[in-house]
Length: 361
Ligand code: AGP
Image (cartoon, rainbow, N blue to C red; front, side):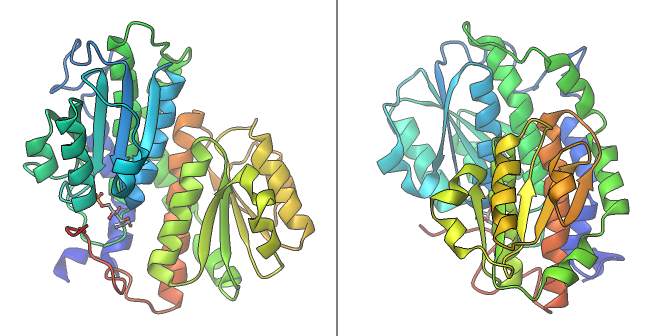
């Protein structure tokens, strides 16, 4: 317990550690407008034509984030649930880079997928928090997210460090793939990253997630929607919420709401709409659909967005490059889950039936 310091729970301590853990993740990896990983010098990805990410749970959501950025760089990329690797992977050979994203480096499903990919000839890379973990030892290469130890079963700071590491990795890979098209605004994106730790601090200081948790707690279900990078944040928001509150929560791609889940929407189902940029029309129109069925809408993202005008509440984040805005929205959702679970008196750091590292398939 001494390790919790001034905080009631490790989870809250780890949420508040993010300005520091993110600064560690970034340190030395952006130089002169370029991305550098000590373990992966230029040329490391020569011959790679496609990338596949394998991961579970929160790490899968970080992998979704990373895979979108690899695709945006013009490289074919898939994100696969490690537990379903056998049935979902396409052809794999020496032109495939399989990236195992795993905080612990010990998740059995992820290790199994990594080994299967290696057996089929893929080049493998582990993105992990734990130096010397099984994933780091078994993969051809390893990159560390440098988040520091995470005690709470609910992954928080490791998620944000994974997403940042993968975003940087997307640019590093694009540097080696001949037909890749690194983002036009790559310089602006990398420059904005330097401000991310400070922006997280701003969210931590200004959030009203605790009041919002109190106001919405007496609800039937909690829905989270988003599109693009916002979709992975919405899925992560729902996972975190159900994991520690034991309340029913689901995350959807914004556009999928009208293909079924909308039938569940009532005034008893608050909807958290995550967006990362002002041109996210899909999230706005689908949130309005839910609002017209009585659902309270909470906009989660920067202030400069039309959704803020139609929402009942707003969890705001500082203006930044759209690639980083989702990670700030995620901090708001981490705090929402934490305060909801606290008000429900749940055992936040050790939710029932769950383990920090799942070493069985
Ligand atoms: C998330 O809060 C959970 N702890 C869980 O989903 C976790 O992310 C998953 O089990 C994967 O763990 P890993 O990153 O250690 O592989």
